[in-house]
Length: 303
Image (tube, rainbow, N blue to C red; front, side, top):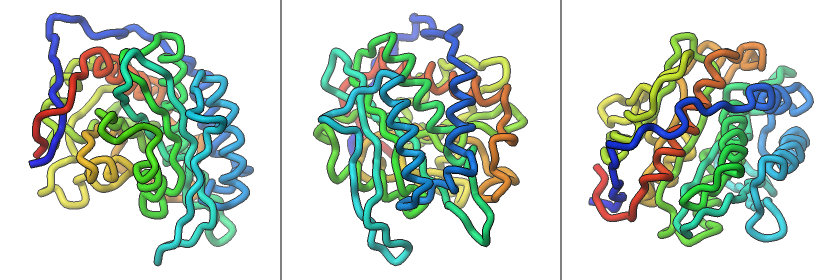
């Protein structure tokens, strides 16, 4: 049995911020810029990836995210059978809370680059997650959280979750201070209005808080994709949250089911569901608000 955390469930409280609005124009602009042809598919170690970093560094500052030192950049190298990259880069900052205990919000900004002269722009995978991360940061910059919230735009997810691995090998705070990882990977293309929240099977104490997140007009939360018997449909190991799970850090992974544009050159901004995506981002923010208000100390077991 591994550690997880106890959550203080205050069921009498209403859901915080049901009517909370986000800047939809900025949210969509972030995805559009990150998935432009000029970014060349944002593959780790490429000029296009560096352009994405430059844009995100400015957006981190605008959103109110503070660096831990003088820089947001966490450099690391990759030397595996799958890839060799001399310098990959995570972008990491925080919004201070009243507690030194932290929630880590992650979304990878890299994608698969170019293949056979075709650019794989990765609008949904995962410019959409990064856009939502920035929207969450903008909210908490104006509404200071109870816990410190670390925002990490991770590199090299597509090369085997290497950015998450590097983050956890050299964390900006002690690992024992990290109470939860909220990971976003593909939030913007779903015509059924369904955003999945994965992780409550392993950490059932999260379930009441996920269930308190009320549907938006164009998006609702669906729990699942986290049971071992589901095979490929078990998402526990399929994005950066897997590295946190291996370190016994509880996680919630927000994402949509695979679609026709997944890892295809057609994953462009034009495919983004402009009604669903802002509401999906708002579901994540409302969960963050709820969990930040009621998160307690580690202490119970995960499955």
